[in-house]
Image 1 (tube, one colour):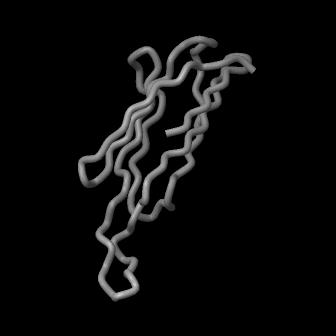
Image 2 (cartoon, rainbow, N blue to C red; image 1 turned 135 degrees about the vertical axis):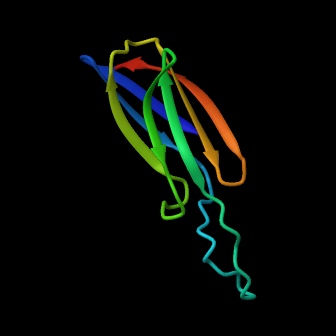
Length: 101
């Protein structure tokens, strides 16, 4: 997972890229069999133990989702923790230091 968090004035702009197949369950292989659904269901970002972003995703989101959001109340050097969970029980968590512009 790639995360970039930059603070400017009082707002932190966060951009993240999550490598994931995001299969809908409707795509077919060349032999005609369906590719099983496999998609991210939740993404959560926390700063100092407080949730600053939460999204519920589904099969309609494209492969390797790119998400961005902003929040206030952080400073350069603080840590941002981002985690996701998918419909097959897979998950990932990453931390990134917030940088100054």
